[in-house]
Image (cartoon, rainbow, N blue to C red; front, side):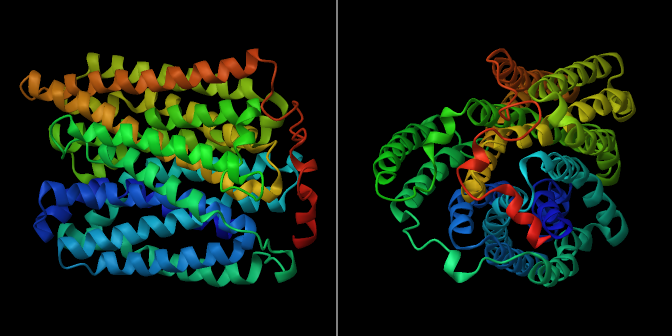
Length: 481
């Protein structure tokens, strides 16, 4: 668990840590706005692209080898990014980095499913939730600290170099501690290459106009979304046909399970709101109020602290309370974001960082009660043999939600900024309502699950219902430990 969580932390940290370094990167390498956007969004694009096929590969051929290979490529790509001397070099390194992160992350949730029985998974998923929350929220703080220590010209390079010693140690310990799968137990059936290609084309066509929303002007870019819907419809038809004779890349029957289908919907919309606030909040603080990178990172720290503590607690109590715990978390997030809106209205200008500390702490506590419990409950009824691909589908939804949320909040932010003559406070407050809207939709999905009579895991005890009766029993992992 230590190895996989550290690796997961590194890959998710690189989603947010680059935000505060963008001004330094732009100055040092003389990047255009479009090139700078690709440094940020290219990582997210290839990350989302590789999640599902990598999860399926780990399920079929063994998760340890996929994990170590992905981590090795991620570490090398981090070194390449730190050594970059121009735009193309850095963009390619970030694309490779994102693809490697997409290989590593499905193995994390898959290994938790493999090594722990259903009743035991609350605590490790709680730690995973804390890892997700901390990595996303603490990224700006850590990035700002590195830039403060090493200077603007070299600090952004250390954002990538810091991955090197951690990655090397994680590779060595992963090879030693993570149980492998004997060759005779590996699946020999097809990995569904047609399904993988169709899904890849659909995901790229869906994500590309979202991550490039600010750079690609005009409405023609949204035709890619229409194309994505058509390709994904073809993907679903192919998967249904392929499932009759082999194991498809995504088991569509999982979406008939209430806990999985609604849990994935909660994750999709919650990540649309949860991550977009850091994008617009950082813009407000650094570009609007002229906070330093370190000061902007410190302003987001209350959210990170609340999320870390609550995620660990949520993992311990999720089996007792089930999906109502997620509902309570979402209500707290909504309350915290509403309080943030009120605080900025009462204390505009330079005092924003202090005024928002308490409401962001409340939102962070709520976030910790959403991410890890929702992951635990959503995957509770998934057979262990499909744990990697099921977790990857969940994460792909989260990446899509992140892209949609940032595009929507960013569009409102910049339109309000232009309309009101550079009023950064008003622009952020308007974008915050978009964030709150995503959280409300996630809340509706969670309430629907509760009212539907499901605790999200086939029962309040977290035993997982039928999930571990359909594949390897979860307790097989005990021998490995």
